[in-house]
Image 1 (cartoon, rainbow, N blue to C red):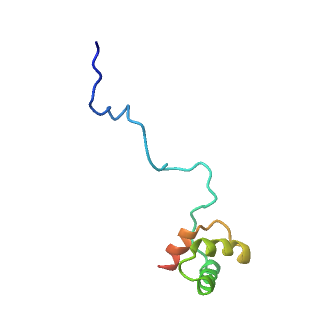
Image 2: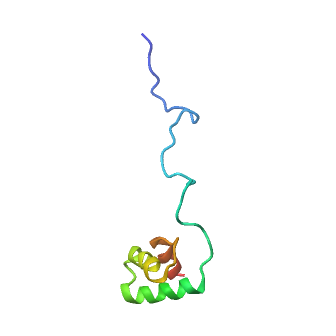
Image 3: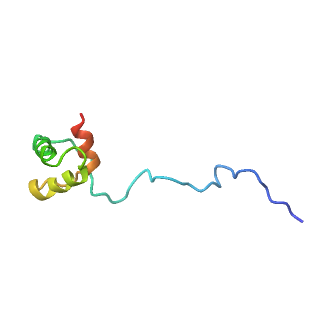
Length: 80
């Protein structure tokens, strides 16, 4: 009768778990912020508040036709 090993598998046999490091297709591209984007975020934040970042990003697209920014990017830019 063959006994199975109870130790952890070697690094080469471990299954990778967690967040992917790269994304093949992404709608958010890294680029510098423009003055137009900064002004728009300030106006939208006054209107919708600092707790609705997803809505701010959505309105950035709808009202200002500025695409490619997520709510998290807007939040981090506003706090700088």
